[in-house]
Length: 474
Image 1 (spheres, rainbow, N blue to C red):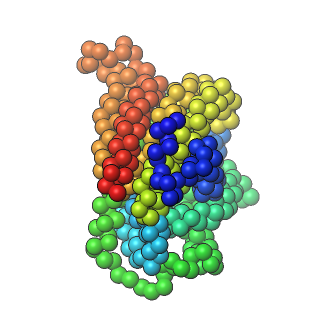
Image 2: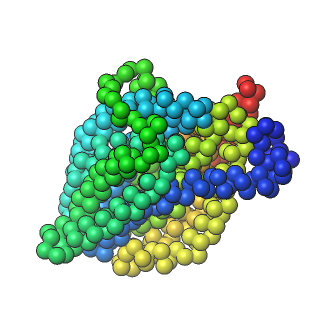
Image 3: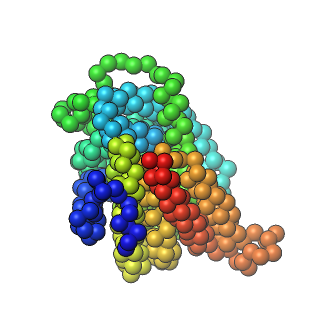
């Protein structure tokens, strides 16, 4: 434990009066910032859980179609989230340095960036929907998948704007608004799904496409509700970003893009690896696609804890760096990593023990439930790697280092996971070392474990080096 004593300077050292007391104090501060984010993220992913669960109880075809549509939506949504996340470290640094007057300009330019990205994503989503016409799918599955992508795509411009304001609000320590809004949105999502998926109360029965309408409406609700909250809350007055009109300014946009593009590519590398699995195993039938969707959906639910912790850690570390306290930043980063590893161990054990009830809660199809329970074993195995890599990535981004993590994630997911997954899952005959029979979804999940482990170890070493170098620079 002696190494931990060197992580913060004497003047601001949170452990100067005792190691245990200092760690507990930082855990309390981190959790105070993270728990509203966690509730909000759980509510947000809960909408996706509701979509998959309701589609699963509508029919196996609706479940498969929604799963394929969600794979495109998630790929675009998370890539966009990464692209606009550059607002977070910049605002956090300004807050840490006491430069509140610089924050509104960053947010305004971030919104211009979000508008452009959201409109491009809308167009790209509709083009991407055409890929289903070239896949060997059941006609009902193809119709639901295309309909989901096309309808939900109209929420992408609102999503990018919301994520800019989300990053701004989080970086000024205001996380509760997103929690309340997400909880309300979850209720709206469940109601609209119930009305449109099953055709209750005289509404048309849209099946899986009803989930898309619910998703799109809830995304717009997120944006409008957060704007209203910002308007009435005194916490935003000192950094209010809408005091006057401002046209796009290339210098700030270039800075935001320089930080955001590598983060966006990083998110794309990871999410595309998961999403493409659904497309690659589609030829094995609806049961395989549905089982993959269930395992991925529940894993995404667990993933919200490290993601929320990572966003809070980005703020904590970024504010320390803005205040020129590199030792405190390193201390905060490693405390966050330690908390994440403890959570991951508990999550892995719980997921493995409860895999069958979890699968049964998603679907009434016994074949899909059995396959999903098998995949949840693999999901449990990669919890330590998956949880730690997302938190460490956020800590590194607080240092405004984004290109090296991007290259590492591309290597881990596109250089390791996808090629290995294709070998194990598809078993191409022209490869002499491929398995005799395709392992289907299980082969891809084994490959994900390997890729995530590569990413986690690489990022751990990177954080250690970046944090130490920042201290040496002073």
